[in-house]
Length: 283
Length: 283
Image (cartoon, rainbow over all chains, first blue to last red; front, side, top):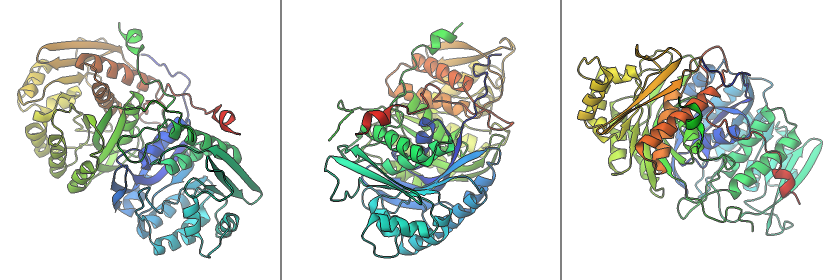
């Protein structure tokens, strides 16, 4: 018998609750890839299936909420070190997702509030946004909205991002990492993007070179890599910084299959060819 | 603006039609990982959702067959270089899968005939096996059964693997890579496993050191890495050899989350930590 892996690996496990995107640019396949690339192992529970391509989302089919619960219950043998939540398609899925989170108290929860597809399709409703704020937000350790999502999640018409973040923290969310790619503020130079961490005793900004093109899956990549870093035990600030660096690199190495959005390559550092394994192993 | 990836990458695309496994050991997430690890890009269309863990599969929920067709139709911007088929849960899914394949003539088709879960649950029926043989087999370029699956796919009670393979080739399947891990023949030493390629003018055997333990997702890993190698333009024999070497390494680097089956680590060669990206990029 051969045991190459004699020291038993234990990987930090991230439970992903998210939609499935057949392109692999975003959704649970992208989440699993980001988690793996950051040294973790992803369990994935689909909350919805979708029909989409690199232009837009044309259909969202919510998964049976009881199947979401049963799938989670079956995974008891895994020690879960972080939870990442993506697309929630309807009220029943929202309830199932909050049930799954409540059954794992103390596990850090990263939520990417997916409200709109890259191509512009609305993926949420006013009723669902209200329920998201009332029921899910109090369970969130860190929310990763872009500026559009931040504005839409606030009940009051606040103009300033910091005030908006403070309002969402009052609703029970522990921290926010607000990305500024989608809607740069006037102060940021056109060739930079700025992301901001808001937490009760922390306010921290990062500035990155703006990348050319439009990307499909940048939000999923950021939130999942952040969850993986938290699962590995990193501090919030370090995990936020590392997740941004990882996402920037995955986008910079992206590829464009057609004429629309580019897809991130989260495994850009992986040598693509299995050159030598055969020679080593053949008798 | 920054463009790191100045030479536009074009990745060989594999269309995966398979079940979803929440553990990530097998199913479409595992398939996507194997394809990526072998230098390709996976599009994934779920044929079924499942409830399972590292012991067994407890539920299989077939996806709406028309959603399978519409999902495939939406992906027209991708140039597909190979198709990989895994779990097919019922007759309607089988029809949807054959429709998807027929709309892409000339693309190599790798099919892993998933008949039984690692924990022993039957995932197919006699009626479905008959339909698989009659409708799907004539579309298959290479089938990757284990010895149990090979025996169950044959209509006649043949004793010999070569005769069984020849019968399935008569049904229209172009070639078979038969794995011998599950049920070693008497001639193979206990510390080895032997896999055999059967094709009209080729018969080729490989012998590998047997690995300790039981694995969840070895069949998916083999079939998907084979599809990725064919998508990259490799010959059948080389692709079969490289896929076996890749799968052996992924299993050898596997990890065991609980007391049951181990999970393959298909990204074992990926450096886990993003050490330097931040220093390079911060201003």
